[in-house]
Image 1 (tube, rainbow, N blue to C red):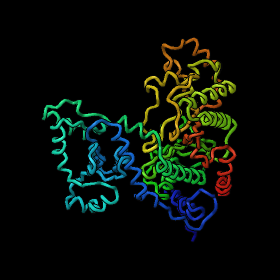
Image 2 (cartoon, rainbow, N blue to C red):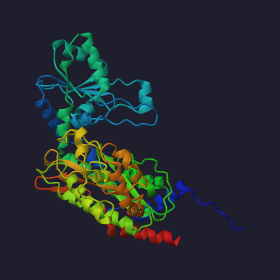
Image 3 (cartoon, rainbow, N blue to C red):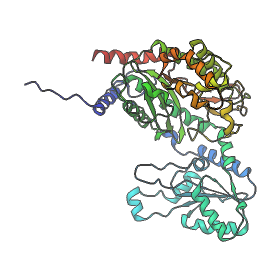
Length: 512
């Protein structure tokens, strides 16, 4: 008797695909060579070494060198609330210590050698049973360079002593819990709030410039993200769900030693490509769709941020190709502009000009000098810092409230680029289906109904051909002493590269 088997569902299909990919390519993606077994990831670079301890020590010295007399107090952060949110250490705490246990406080007194103290929470038997045993104090001191380890319960008394002496306390004002503790104690002693000072601007400026250890981890995060992109291309086909692509991406992250995504993965297809922060990832992809992936692994607490846009069936249509080529041309022009000494937003201005000219040539813009027309297509600033956070700390040299006014003009603004900065470059074009109908609302009070109406009449026939096409291309770039390095340069982004990468997979699923 012939047994009729049920057609596998999307989850079962994903499992089969993952297993096949592991067998064929080792989930590696770096060389494209087939391997019988996946290589074991090397995460030895995450271990604390003497050289790395010196890096953290130098950071602490630089910070205390920039403050007046006083005490630095910084917290690692507390446990997450709820059962489904994992703890992640406070960025600034990790930047100074390399230590990542929750409910930890570090106290450093300027000008007092041997005052690098760690305050650790007391562990109950129940806590140890549920969360695991504690690392011995001696081992922590040896591994991280602390001078002393003190019980967490003694912190409030020490804060009271410092306040009683009128010693300035430098804290991270964004740490609401620690700030509340100190302000409450200051209130009890009737001490002025000016005794509590914000060290956040100092730390954020330090974090703008990445050292070799940071660049190494970011490069690893970027390489892992590149592997994830390649693996996604290898399995992508019409009929799959967006969440299957997301699952492959994040599987590859974990498989290669990345603890988590640096942000919620975006895998938007078809009409979802025009939603900038699309997050549902639950649509079934169709033949002829584009798939926009904005993804990034976090490795050793350092983020990658990469965007690529691919055709689900392996081949770009004429309209998709035209928009893709324009975004890629704009991105390359923006990257070329990232040179030391030039304004940080110079790349954005260059990309905007390229996109405006290209949209004009396609018939989607009627006047390349029209600020509002360029603003309609220029939705966001294409550069941001990258590091311990995907939108990393640091001053851009221009008040954020005014950036919007300069997004669609040719003026290059922002602080001068300097060696050690790492920035993303992510231009995009998003032709929302209902975009033109929103013009009156978007530009109400700024542009007359007659002007927007004339614009719509002229571009609507062309816009209809491109509607629901969204393309974003993003790379991560390090500023050097003489120029820049594209840290993600190995991740395919040329049309021929992408179609070739997907071609082998296309031939496979077409035969099925």
